[in-house]
Image 1: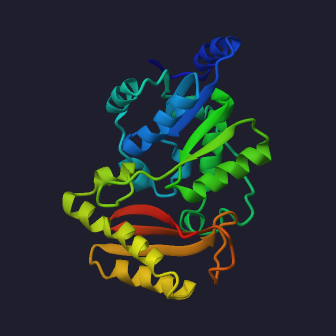
Image 2: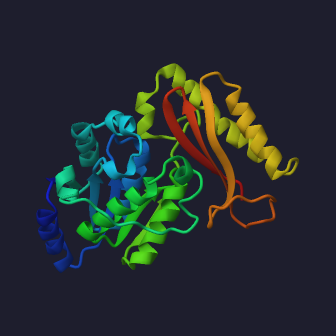
Length: 280
């Protein structure tokens, strides 16, 4: 496994593989890797000749400076895990390498980035689009792998690829969960054992709500989820929306869309967690 920090060297190494007609897969990450990332990597390794994993904490997608400062950085442990997973290249640039000058691009995603995460984290998805497009231009992958936990991000990346006409196939990989149901996240590293147990109520509540669909309306389902989670002293719902899986716009009736997803953000004390559930 090779650890590369410069775009120029990365380009040279990958061009050699391309000249041998080898397919290239990319898993973009911000490090602090866990089994959810491992699932992305395993899929990438299985489907491509060469697997590149990027490890870069992107400053332009953080609208909260404390969140950026506290984000876990564990490159040595990340590389040890990735070597065991048969990754070929770890691309671990510093900020100056990715942003030699400010990226002033402003993307227009219509209503995709105006709701949910976009509403509560202004500028977040513009930063995501900036860094993911930069990574796509640097790596030029045939396929790129993203987790379904970040459901809205997945929609944004697909729209960005369409707008910029980048020739890459976006592969969505299902959420990986702890035995308790808690969705794996790098932010879980900031949870105590007690908080982890409490946070497992997020998905347990979402799962219970899915069992009640035939008995209650969309609005009643939203109230059930929010009230149930807020009943736990350490948990506070920031938003819970039930949306069309393609447009991300809220629905009011279960017949409004063939693909319906419930998306949620919850604070477990000071740690912000997101999750989602596919209703149909």
